[in-house]
Amino acid sequence: MEILVTGGAGFIGSHLVEALLSAGHRVGVLDDFNDYYDPQIKHANLAAVRDRIDLHTADVRDAQAVSRAVGRGRYDAIFHLAARAGVGPSIKEPRLYVDTNITGTLNLLEATREGGVGRFVFASSSSVYGLAPTVPFREDMPPAPTVSPYAATKLAAEQLCSNYAHLHGLRAVCLRFFNAYGPRLRPDLAIHQFTKRIHRGQEIEVYGDGSVQRDFTYIDDTIQGVMAALDYEGPIFDVFNLGEYATTSVTELIALIEGALGKKASVRYRPGRPGDVPRTFADITKARRGLGYAPSTPIAEGIPRFVEWDLSSQSPRRDTTLHEAHTAG
Image (cartoon, rainbow, N blue to C red; front, side):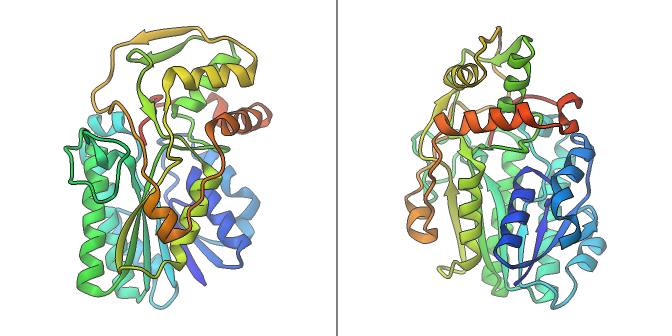
């Protein structure tokens, strides 16, 4: 199949590109290489496959550029991972997040419709569950209030996917990622920041008392679920959680990183931040049934793998300037 991956130079996107190539598909990548973090990291993510992909350097906010990249009859499926990520930055720049994550998704959906693409897989987020009062989170739960512009943009984009499925016959699958981590992890995320700073003997900052819980998902497990969406033949529009069905507190996460590094952390506790939710926890019953999703890497195994990669990596990401360190999905 011919497949376009938007945001294909990012953490999850680059792993997906490699998986698709390994499965024998022809792959195009659309990415704008923006400066949310060092663009050289994103170029490095694609270095091993650069000569095997068609690269479109474009911003999803540019409808004409998106239309040109998608073309007509060129692609069989689109995996839309391009987005502005992060809860904190979305509070500071809500217009940028709305323009990129909502208008950008609309541009992709329009290009998909016009180009005759049959399948659209959208990267959503556990953040859409907001302040859901019960756990684990199920896809059929009544909507709960979201608490950040980032979360709101992901939920709105899901609704656009639903619109295009039911109005235009586009098969659309929305995948709610739960705190994916692993090699090439974005440098602003907590696992990466904690590992770097503990290794260097530097103080780490924890927002709140360390009791915040997240359903951390190793990248290989996330990619297994994403790849399965390519063959899904259930309802024309559907939504799935991709998590580990387990929760880990920030305090427990730090202990795992300490164990992998063989070093103790120096921790400064700070007040909790607006937009953070107390926990994420994925019910993956539906994904197991509909996608054959079978996560196999618990965090006790995944963190040592990540730390091993981080210590051996010579990527330029180590010294990049970061926007924030957070654990939101």
